[in-house]
Image (cartoon, rainbow, N blue to C red; front, side):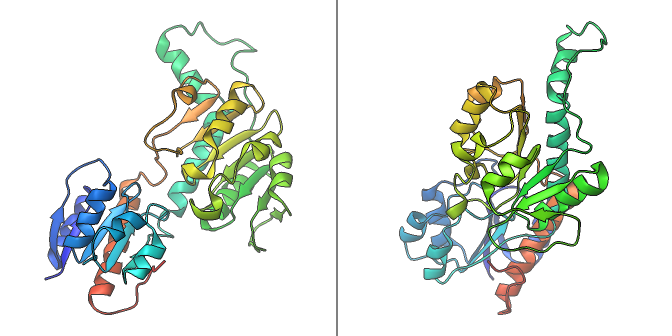
Length: 316
């Protein structure tokens, strides 16, 4: 029977479905696998269901001839997997697109609203017991309705954020995409990242992590933003030069930021945590039970397809 490793505790529904088909080993830990653990797993199991932070690097693949021929990633982003090394080892890789789109877009809107309306700061004020009542100039933020929304990466998630902004908040939408992209809603593609950063009131990043997108949002890009601009990242932490973002926020160069991901996740710099004009979430993008179950079942479907010699539905 195919030996399958689950690298962490996935939803119970997913675990039970996996056990019904395969010889399952559950690594019942919240910590992510380091390179040495990943290398051992590759040498021990036929298939692995893994997730963000599990270090399936080129070094892990090179440590020993891998037994594993199938890596089913629980998540859309797979920059923690060296796909070139996997391909060279004859190991297929899948991911879980589509099912995460709406949940991630919802979190983007949560961050937009919370940052623009200073919701995190306001909640801290109430909890501290120092709020002394309403007054006309207390905690004035920025109204979201009607502001220009800039999307970086107009894929599924980018389009879902754009629809929420346009149809829900009457926001004009502009977007930057490396290739020409037509969308089925009112939105205008701009020619450069700099143009988008300079033109939008609220910017949301939804591009994949790693590769050419590493530090796509650098000091120059942040420097092009309006002083009143708000920056939101629901993509991957490495897309943003975190040090440059912190410096801009500390200097008041931009108005605020809403972050669900971090460059060295789960490490969040103390300098970010010290800023009142930043809303910080613990990577909640897909954190809804029905979404996580759907992700797990999609990953499992790819493992089943591989085990039956069929083409992977979500091959990367």
